[in-house]
Image 1 (cartoon, rainbow, N blue to C red):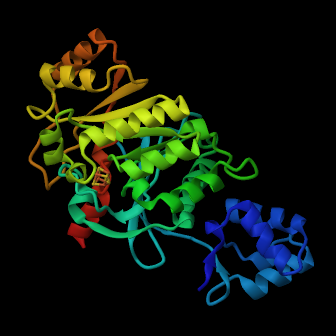
Image 2: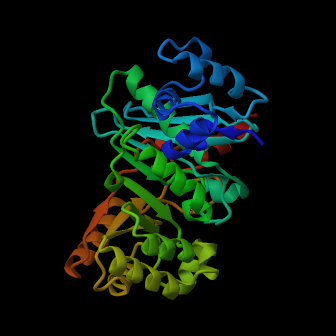
Amino acid sequence: MPTSLHDLTYPAIERALVADGLRPAHARTLWNAVQREGALALAERTEFLPPLTRWSAEHVGESARFFFDEPALTADTASSDGLTRKFLLRLADGQTVETVLMGYTGRSTACVSTQAGCAMGCVFCATGQMGFVRHLRAGEIVAQVLHVQRELRARRAAGLRNLVLMGMGEPLHNYDAVLTALEILTDDRGVALAPSRVTISTVGVVPGILRLAEEKRAFNLAVSLHSADAAERAALVPASRRWPLDELIAACREYGAKTGRRIFFEWTLIAGANDSPRHAEQVAALLAGMHAHVNLIPLNPTNGFAGTASAGAAAREFQRVLRERGLPSTVRQRRGIDVAAGCGQLRAEKARAA
Ligand code: SF4
């Protein structure tokens, strides 16, 4: 079975080359090419010394031991303010995933997908509405970030600063591939993202949260909460029937105790459904004593869900109640709504148009 060079950490590339009789220094050269350029004719690379050139010619390419992940760009849309770009990338097997780039100012953020489709079925989410197709490999996650970096370089913009795993899919349902991708992307010798600038988003996969706590990973954790009432949450987030709210909050408390890290709780504001002062009181009580921050995000409308975004006044009132209870929060902008910025929306639109 061929292996993507983008699936491999630096030590894994080094081990592969040394096992084939090359020197560790060759690994650095190959790693740089993998991280920066993609598959640009390896044999033509002038910085490759003869042994590496010969190794590449023999072992990299179609039907060889190793290949590159080079997703093809099939759609590229920009928001009207020019600050958000959404890319639809086609993977080798024809599946498409969305990658978003927000901002070019030196504070840019990439939002990447971790699965094709999603098994979690959140009712307001276009990806949830399409169902689960498959997990992405680490290399397919890495390749999305490399695509964003090439876009930034083309604009002579500063390098990528933040990474959020909030695109299509549930990252903790694909734990090993996601954590390998993050090991590659935070390696100082490559993309070199700071772990503190990486956010893993989860709908509440309790075993994954406990594993992150156990392994004391230095990434940010964002938990999509949406409701502090078990029955109401189960109606919005079917996965909470498998990992009930009380178990989720217990796992978050354990994560906080073991890592000392603040947890971000995401709250999609849906008019009339979860945006009343009563809901704000409930979440403040649920998270009492936890090192937490709530992100309030007005709903991105999707074709498969009848709900609408809360009005600005409701969001402000919600935030006021949280503030009074000592729970910090931020109302997030719905950036790039005109480029179908909610995850799965661009892929769904393209599928309808096809
Ligand atoms: S919101 Fe996230 S976890 Fe829920 S269905 Fe969409 S992609 Fe999956």
